[in-house]
Image (tube, rainbow, N blue to C red; front, side, top):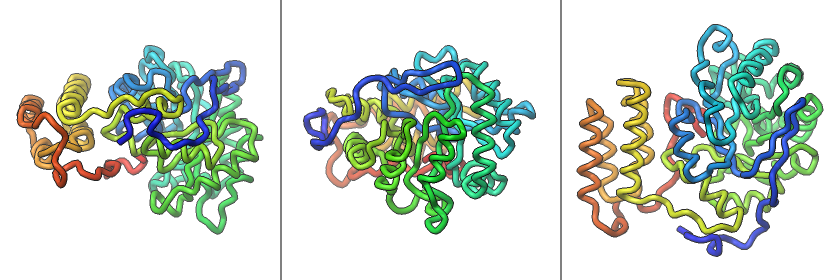
Length: 368
């Protein structure tokens, strides 16, 4: 694992200076070109506060907000206290009703959203079959009406997160992106896969590059960005204005900051190991329980599983944590695991060798 920018591939660095996102009266300047993806069931205020330690200027997002649910009185807590966040936080909305999306956007702006993002990429069937998320890829005229309605409802920038298309045979990413731009989108995050692909195969970075070349609004590349090296290669291929990190940050809230450092030519902050990971897991656990009570313990289990990797005995610890009946029991397991760790890195062949990004939470397939 490289520990300094000099160890990274020699590739074109990210464009210097702030990235301007135009709004309908309120423009935004983005000082960090690495964005943290909205993650269902993950990117709450506690998770965002951890990401901020390593990436204070990065654009982070709330969990996705269903406009219809918001209309019915649910989901407002996801947008609570946004104005108190020390850095920019966007609100990502999804629905198939332009009027509901416009009203949700107004509420999000009033709550302190830095920008509004429209989800046109989530592949989850229960969302897509109702016309939300990637379902809008099959209804481009409706998708454009939604962008027009949202852009006309707020003063802050409106962006879209989408995919290359519904499937390979029908995909027209350049044509669709141009139409979104003309409808009022002031930025585009493009995942380099179709909805049909889900998250299989490799992201098609050259296809993102073709979209970037056709647009005059900022384009953010998404898909298979798991470290600084990936980000540099992606930018060299796509010419994009930045990258968005998704699944790779599960259990690794430092990832956005490491990538940003690498792209800016700064020394990479070290990745926490062993006791530092355990300490972070314990802190996350305690914060969730303080905020959510007994439910917080259940929510914390997936975070504990993602964070407690890469050191001797981690697999055994994860199994025990999933059965811990209380905060005190979980903290005791973490304390014992930290005390038993050797001083050095894990021996070859122990848990943690050749780690891959953690899998998504089964209940939240949009965590990617």
